[in-house]
Length: 74
Image (cartoon, rainbow, N blue to C red; front, side, top):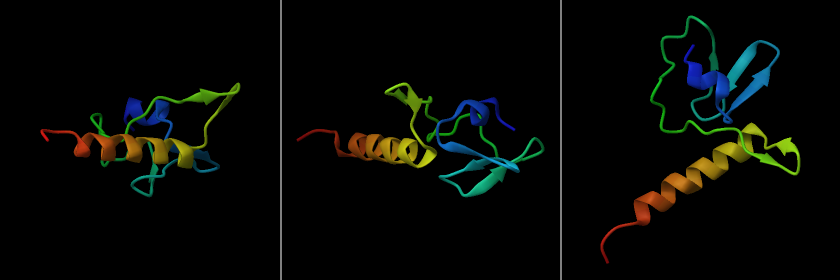
């Protein structure tokens, strides 16, 4: 398991472990798919004293990545 997956806001905690909301797979300790340089990694955002849900983190990150694509010369 990537260290990033443990601290990622997009990974939701489930009874069986962590679940990556973006790539839709269970993150296990022997997982070979875990990437240390995932472009969807996002620090946990705390709003009003509570962390946002994994789905909310995913929406924020997707909007951030989409806005980067729109930048450029005009």
